[in-house]
Length: 272
Image (cartoon, rainbow, N blue to C red):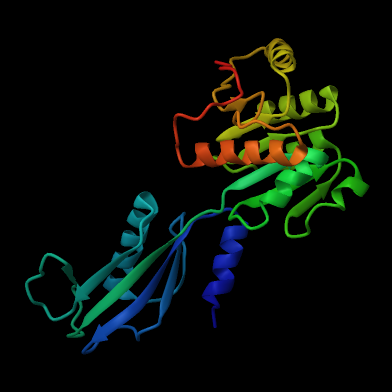
């Protein structure tokens, strides 16, 4: 028997969105009992069932629509052959009943990659513990990485090698908080060399350091770079210079970008 909840967990761990379809009401005869569930993946694959046949086909098509709107909804399906009403869809099956399905959108947990687990990186990871981000912390110092909250995914190893091995989903958030300028540049170059489309790249730096690194990056990569998502210096201009305060500034900037909030004072220059 398929455990839909385990499948949802695996789906979210893979960074996939989906829709859970649940039979919430059945009047008369119908193809599935109340409580039956169908999980539809973003690629159209499915697990579970709400009865098969025409109803299941319509449910899958509706689930694909839900993944576009990203909104939950309820939909009723009529099996009596009557003329459909505004809120009820007529189904070409002869069960003779009415079935109502609930479509629950399961979003992808946004991924934050913290590259450098020093003072600021650790404080940012601590601040993310109770939020819905999937947090991956990478550091090349095992003793530093061990101090990170175990609720996060911790990766120990060479930064460039780990970045090259990562499958970074589009729309991810990347925070560069290395412990030297050289490390930060290597991380930035490795990220910009990957075939990925992050929503945000933030680098802990001064304006002079950021400008120097970007000029160097353009020269070494020798190609057109989209730096519209690069924030360096990182964070919102909230005041404060302790690691904890800087972490709050970084997280505030990420939240503002995630929810498309304008009017905030960013520390960064425009790098495009």
